[in-house]
Length: 399
Image (cartoon, rainbow, N blue to C red; front, side, top):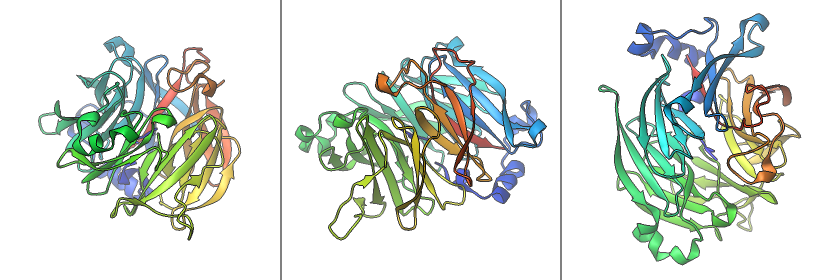
């Protein structure tokens, strides 16, 4: 999941120099008027959603350790607004607004990041799983996993700071899907990512793998252009575009398997592994899940939720070049610091609110990985071992 997601923006993979430029060049008017309380040296902060306690925990580098350690700087309590089960988070390209998809309450929360103000809660439908911003910030597409399954558009008017429901596609009613409906055991969209121009969205189905598959949405027409049942493409989770925009990486998994695929974003077809035409790649673990690129675009990291390990892929060759045996118990979604030093991975709780019970973790929070050393540095147990805690979504906001 995005996954999924959000799962992914080019700005999040920029070099440190460009991130520092963004610090001065893209601060919103609201942020200048109401600067948030934060450490002045810090170039970024990490937002992690705890779907068990309905809170967003914000962490940043710790000045006492010269930025080598991390501290919690703020908590946003979404439960006070009736929001239940904040699952995935994504930002506009300038990180001025955050969109949080909430599974149980069936809505999307819009937060102005400068002052942490909850601007609006938009009803999108039962089992709202992921909200991801289009590359040009004009809209947000939302994956809604209710029984019929739908992709819902939220229009974005930055000038008026207005966010409203736009178009809606019920998957089962799409003409192309209907032609092959017998091949799809489910029609619930889980995660997605866009081509660089925002013209197409690659949407995984699920959430269980036996109800998975892949849809490619023509965003302008708001209808499907290609469909791949789970018998062809066994995906149900992570989706991420390569930094150069030429490829889309997708994965799928369960308690017994984990694998991934590479798609050409021009032909919208899977790329083979070998001369025999094999398209499914092994994730070397169980329940392949979160994915993220290093800021320089040189590596793609992928975690296996059920086996608690990670693989590192070279996007130039699409070969696995390294593996980390343990990244924390039950890892889910990840992101990375703008300087490429650290990976941050959410860890599930002892009573997970989504996914099979067997993925229950023992230390809910965020694990911190030294990217160069490929080593677990620490686990930030932000909810003080609260048995209800169940971390899932994560996003990084550079200043």
